[in-house]
Amino acid sequence: MDGVAEEYDVVVLGTGLTECVLSGILSVKGKKVLHIDRNPQYGGEMSSVNLEYLFKKYEHKFGRIASSTPWTKPGSDASDTKPWEKFPPARHWNIDLVPKLLMACGELTNILFQTGITENHEFTQIAGSFVQVGQGSSATVAKVPSTATEAATSSLVGLMEKYAAQSFMRWVGAFQENDPATHKGLNIQSATMKEVFEKFGLKDSTRDFIGHSMALHQDNAYLTQAGMIKDTVLRIRLYVNSMAQYGRSPYIYPEYGLAELPQSYARLSAIYGGTYMLNTNVDEFLWKDGKISGIKATMTDPIDKSEMLKFETKCSMILADPTYFPDKARPTRYLLRAICILNSPIPALRTDKKCNEDKNFSLQLIIPQSQIGRKNDVYVAALSPQQKVCPDGYYIATVSTISEGGSDYVNELKSGLDQVGTPVVTFMVPPVPVYEPLESGHQDKVFLSKSYDSTSHFESTTDDIQDIYFRATGEPLTVKGLREGQLAVGGK
Image (cartoon, rainbow, N blue to C red; front, top):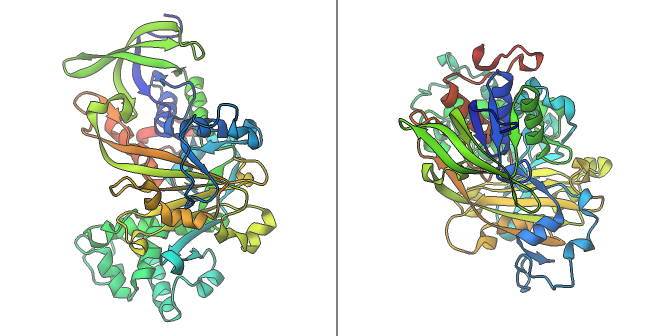
């Protein structure tokens, strides 16, 4: 059993970013880690792929999405054509299947910095954060202000409401959980954000802009849920602080795509003794007294799929993405996603002076649910050659949301697709189940992650990383000093 030990502290299954971050940190902390993925590449759902992969994997349509031209099923193009050959070579494309943006001052960025991952990567700033107001022909897209000047002239807040909005933001900055004098006379444990907005006289459109584009709530449940005031304030502060870090927008993105990040954590784990195995299927899970005790697995050749290594090993716990334990997770909803390849920037950026100066035509656009009569927001993440994910002259826009039933997925994504313009080609990803674990993992020592959601940012993923670490170790995840080798994880 060369390369595989008889026993590990932790077996990690899947190489999504969540699993790889945990694998790397646990290895640095001194845990003996075996990390396995059934796939031939790192990244899992967060893989970066080329155009040939998309054409062979997903339904696609050239030109206007609303045209009567039928969608072409994957692999059914004429036998003598290879549509991807009409585009620049594969090496110029790094298309993220789940393009999520990093908050400049977010916890994931902090984890990347404290573990030294940022030393090996270049990051570019996303040019702007935008929000849609209205729908259909009356829909307008406005940039979320990044300076005082932009705030004063922004169309997001009416002239008579600007003072109220400024007062609200000053209150957000002054708010202290333990100082009732900063609570505006409200009981923050029982009061709701709806009551706070009413205190400041903020209209529904302004609430949408603040709650969805700054606090990054995914729906309007936060408005009437008691105890959400502190959480919302902290979310807004994170957005504002991230915006102040570089200006223009609070978001950054790694050059060459997100799949570079899981690979970096795989290397970090390996440096500290972790063992990685791709193309490896788990044949059987071993149990003792109701707890996981080990696995039997087979590693195969990536080309001919022949058996290369069959092994059995013991472990004290397993961290895994939910697809490895379908009986221990449930799909709570379904993620819809369309990937658009463009030959011009999306309309919201074409007239932006700064974007035209530095050729950075990238953005996050949030379309709040209430603006379009939905229960879930629609997200658009647009990337450009500046992020080194596509060749010059091309752009990538991914539209995503949560399905609300029915089979007309294009219509559910329509509000986002309308803002993209006319793509060269659009790929429609089949509905992806969003899994959540059924149990905490304390009893059987199997700790499952959540699937990636429809948001175009990493804040919910970071929450999941911290939650899994706490459930598995009983300690909060802290990473200060980790890159200096101080092992400051879990407060130690």
